[in-house]
Image 1 (cartoon, helix red, strand yellow):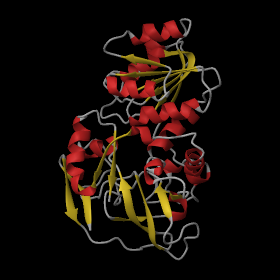
Image 2 (image 1 turned 45 degrees about the vertical axis):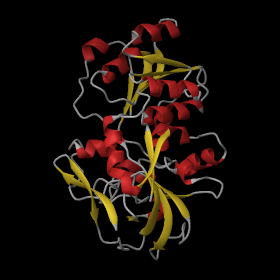
Image 3 (image 1 turned 135 degrees about the horizontal axis):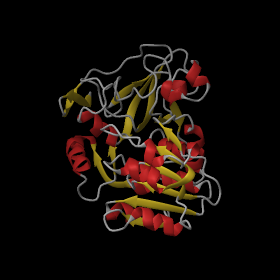
Image 4 (image 1 turned 60 degrees about the vertical axis):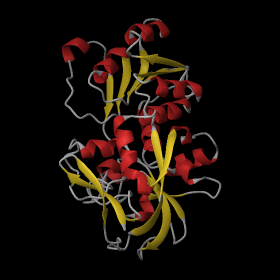
Amino acid sequence: MRAVVYQGNGRIGVEERPMPEIRENEDVILQVTMTTICSSDIHIKHGAVPRAIPGVILGHEFVGKVVRTGSKVKNVRPGDRVAVNVETFCGQCFYCKRGYVNNCTDPSGGWALGCRIDGGQAEYVRIPYGDNGLTLIPDNVTDEQALFTGDLLSTGYWSAKIGEIKKGDTVVILGAGPTGLCSMMAARLYQPSKIIAVDLLENRLFLAKEKGLADLILNSERADIQDEIRKQTEGRGADVVIEAAGGKDTFQLAWETARPNGTVCLVAMYEEGQMLPLPQMYGKNLTFKTGGVDACDCPEIMKLIEKGKLDATCLITHRTSFENIMEAYRIFEEKEDGVIKWAIKM
């Protein structure tokens, strides 16, 4: 079968690989029907994800059809359409029982797909602990609607959840890329008074405004962000800041734009270390929430998709087939042609 492989040293390429097989009784084999490219794939290519293993098949955001199941799999059966959770988790360890599935202690636990074990930019894929990591797609939900369930929508949903957004809050989202846009969608569920989106790219800000994901958009190259946010909050700053950009200066901007006793959620993946300037932030009494997404709410997210309360199809700006995936990678990495997300049919 064909697959996109991380070849190490800044290289990826399409290779022929053997079909995956059932290894454990909890395994599920999927035929991938649609996949996409994530900024995390680019981070892996650049060598910025130390745990990524050269030779691994990339891809952790995809949907498919169940082909075979291990003897202990109960929740899915051959023929079922499913969305795949970005994280693999056993469901039994200390962290899984507390909902911290990103920290699952199983050797294949946490973010493993497309990083430490073969992922879904391939024709077929093996999913460990299939009962935990797969979400049934209702008949009235399309592959495109379900595509981002296990990663982007899970990240947005998680960021809003840990931000503890309250009705009437002012929420600032730094970064109007895919993660930021999904964070806006999820934040809206909590009925904040205002969502402010900050980015450098006009097409992303336009989308956030056009789709009603943000109430106010700010281009950080054209506006004094701190000053504008103070104007919007009677001089206080934002109640909650979600940092989804991961830029050179966005960590500093995140804590500077939060009000005293506010919450800063760091959901971006940084390629460089960040400075925590404690003397400068002394007295702000900020709460920082950090780490990788705990993608344990996929069933709830799928229900919200089915009800029309979450719809991330507006992120899909480009569509193609697997034959053109390397060109899709190039366009995505270079941020050409206004690309936000690809939908790649197998």
